[in-house]
Image (cartoon, rainbow, N blue to C red; front, side, top):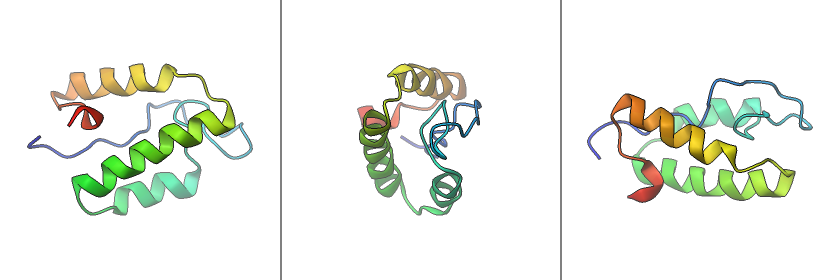
Length: 82
């Protein structure tokens, strides 16, 4: 994986689930903190934790499909497959 891990944001940005985005499940603070993470390993850990968080807040599994599509469009290997 030679390129940067893209943000988990899938361009929905509606923070209507108690401060969590309807598209990715992140809070505004998490969106900012992801950008500051150093290294692919830390970003993959963040993504795995985000999936758990999405389940906790009742977010549907559509994010994985959307994020995979985003990575494909950018020509980047899906970070959770690595």
